Image (cartoon, rainbow, N blue to C red; front, side):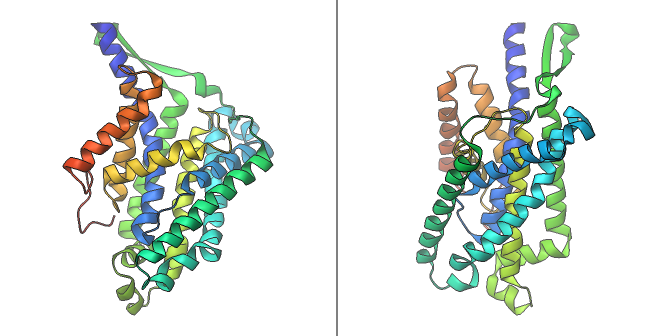
Length: 316
């Protein structure tokens, strides 16, 4: 009996830690969709770019020597954010803006077709560019604590749960960043302008809000957030230029589960996916873990189409 309880608690612990990372990824994607209504197929590949930026910043800046191999990878992940924000900002201004915003407001469905084709093209360019620049050999950011764990004794020592230190610190950073983003969106002037641009483009324009600038900031910010999530995972999981394909479906599933346009809901959706993925390993082989995710996904869509926390009028 103790072995079964211990196995479940270990899987639950692993699922919560991994789910916090997934939640941060989903929040970045949800922010872009919530404000811009863009289905970004390249989102996972921008995350991949963030992982490689964090990897090379760690090596080039000697962050391991300056901050230690324990804190260095997390600093590298945070430093990747401004680099990917700039990349996302430029990508939106030079490319994505041609098929989004006020320019295509009257095109309705036709505008979405162009968005899908453009973001799919961006995805292929980022994958191929990553292959050319970085090769196909899996890499990761070296960290002493990625293989270390805290031991937690429960039930008088009869049940022991091991908490991976790298994933625990990464999860704590992810939760802190989501809380900070929610504060920015709900309390700051910038957040109010983003919400106004999401709710009603024409009304926002009449109020003097630069909607195109709001979209550029949103796209850059959404990609930067997801890049940090990728950087946090880079010390625990090896990655290649095609790693984005593994995560982009998880991101979309998390966003829909939480509720389209809901920032907090997207985080809870990602958290739920992490728990389902890890706990399903207790009953199913590894190859079927994603099957369990989509069974739950279909059930939620069937029973509650707006998502767990989504509401018709909710945008944040």
